[in-house]
Image (cartoon, rainbow, N blue to C red; front, top):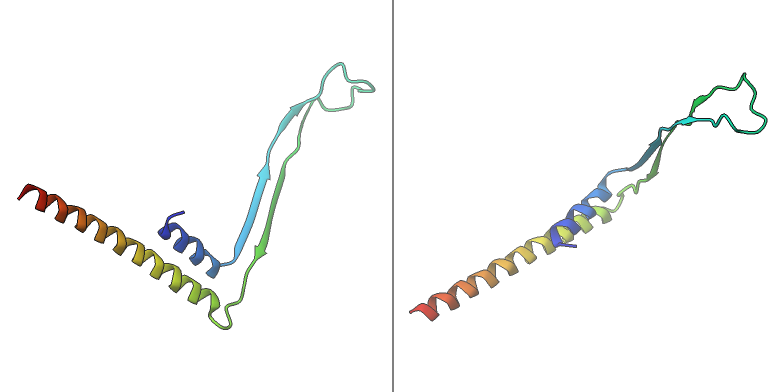
Length: 98
């Protein structure tokens, strides 16, 4: 996981987490099914929709906000390290050609 992805995942802790799902199906009963009478429908649906609030942490002591600030600082430090490595490579390349 990159530092920016970690920072984004940490920032998601500031908001409530909602879980939702659903399933739609369209089914046909077999004509050879035992004990099937003519009053039973040939086609039937089995549809379900569910949603629930999974979790939310109230940030009284700003613990989550501090985690977000720390993750953002790590992401910036990672970007700075990458920029420094690129600059060093460019410097080596320039000195090799001179």
